Length: 380
Ligand code: GLY
Image (cartoon, rainbow, N blue to C red):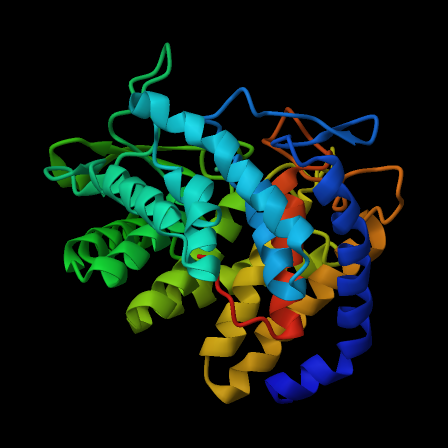
């Protein structure tokens, strides 16, 4: 069945879900204008605006830009701009910036620039791209992820999540016509293809590299998943969406092929649990832990694969995305006006912070619905 036909068959659900998103978000856009929400307490958005270097801080403003682009409602724009203003404090201490400047700024200041032409926002986003590029380790051939924590030396660590940060580099490359940004992004994608994605389509969250020899992987770590050798579902979703984005920005088939491989592994696992993704696809059967954020991110990637793959393959990826979104909408979305969050059952990591609403769940669920509705705005 063609892409368009599948969309038409689901048009009623897409339109109704978008209307529910707009109804709820147009209220919280005003109510939570001065906050950087992460989760909720007793149904009310919490506020992370004091932690200006937190990796999640772009999602609330980014969600507002998504909804502004879809509706033209100025309330969304006001809240997005306020979010960016709060986040500006992060530049007062640039040493604390890390690889997540893509998550934090590309969908915030970067979206501002792309939707409004704001020159100051463009400048900030370019600064972030330069900051991300400066984390490239020339001898080890990778972009360093985190800064050192108290007990760990993270110098040689890469995490699969960074596949979502490198679109900032593709953007900068095009924006100022300097291919160094794109080349380093591709170096990262090639490393992730080799060292993070396993032959069966499952994904390592953390890879520890020899800082001076690109051919040596010292070890892999379980990170936010169950353990070494397991498959943290959000990590798989970052890979799935991240690789198709790398394909979109470079047109290199190997990235689309990798996105498809991870997607097939993800689809197989999600289908086996009624399209409600587990927190880790390779963990003990009991207790059962879910992660809605993984499903929302993966749905975005599956839709982009469907748009970019040959005609006769589109059905599999698009139908899987819709089935997952519908299952999550039915089981996990809270459309009441007594809860500021929408998508419930997100999980931070295996063993803590599980089954709670998380702002990037709402962000990616909305991005996926807007894609199905026909939005041409690609925030990444
Ligand atoms: N990037 C961190 C996470 O996905 O939890």
